[in-house]
Length: 244
Image (cartoon, rainbow, N blue to C red; front, side, top):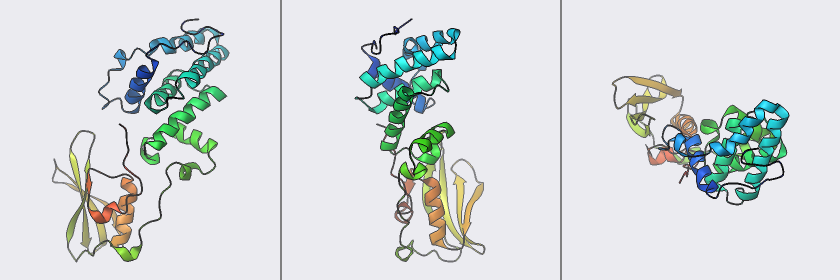
């Protein structure tokens, strides 16, 4: 039966926590984690599930439950990246297996993301969103509650006709910076994006008031970018992610 016997729920390797932390960090961001998945050594954990496919889906469910129960016993109390890695390791190899043990591990993995400030609208898959909504009546509102928007009477500072103001800088995955400017033109207030490696510009939003423009831009950014001015920072609803 490979790593797990039919009666065993906790024959995990001694370094399982370190292994699952590395797997979790890699699974969350394979491109930028700096981790070579071939060096993690997680294959032995997944092997009983892979072998069970030869016996049918019921055997796959049984093997998955044994692994999930082992994680609940030895990894769930630790939490952190290891429990997120446990969830991803199961999900990546036993797609579609639905049971109480696997749901427990998945819930713990998603709670880890929530506690670290991972935003709902940029990092969760449709499958993860459906799972969360099915287990939490408030749905997205229960993820990281959005605060009420700033009082319109408290700014932002006025923008004169034809004035352009640098309000944010974002950094793309390829390391190139994008500059976001607010511009007061004939058509209203615009958020314009220009790239540090290009002269072209993209009109992102056009709103009738500067307040509405900041509200749109802050909500779209969701979490603090590389830099933002003090006015815009008040319109950004979510905290920065903490993925240490």
